[in-house]
View 1 (spheres, rainbow, N blue to C red):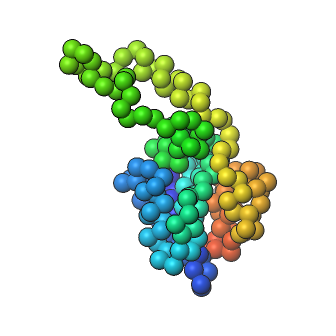
View 2 (tube, rainbow, N blue to C red):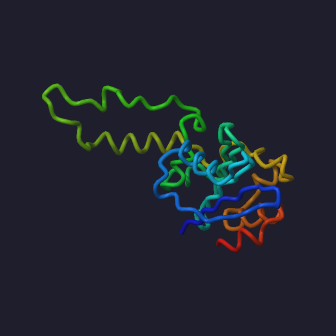
Length: 176
C-alpha cells in the first residue's frame, strides 16, 4: 500500500495535500506537479511511502532541480513510484539511449520480442541498484532535519517523524 502527499511551505506554515501519481512518469513531471502547488516558488516536499518497505522524499524549490532521497533503492526499484525517483543520474549511470541498436527492428523486419536475454537484463539492472539509502540525505538539513536523522528513519514512520520535526504532523495526518 502506498501513501503519497505534497507538503508545501507557505507564509502561514505547511499545507498538506494527498496526490495521485498514477499519471506521473518521470521525475521532471513529478517536480512540475509539485511546482503547481506552490505558485510563490516556495519549498514543496513530495512524500512517498510504501508501507514497511521504503520511503522517498523529493524536494522542489522553485525552478531548481529536484533533490531526491530514497530510503532503500533496491526495494524502490521494484515499485512503479520508486522508478520515477531512481533516475539514471541518481543511480550514476549513463542515460538509456532510446535509439540503441538492441531496440531497433531486426534486419528481417521483425521487432525484437521478449527472449531469454530479458531476464539477464533485469538481473543486471537489479545489481546496479544499491541496497539501502540513495540520494541527497541533506535535503532537509536547512529545515532542521540533519542527514544522520534522515538516514536513520524507519520506513513505517519516516513521514510522520519528518512532519513532526517540521511542525506539520496534524496537516499531514489530515490527508492520510
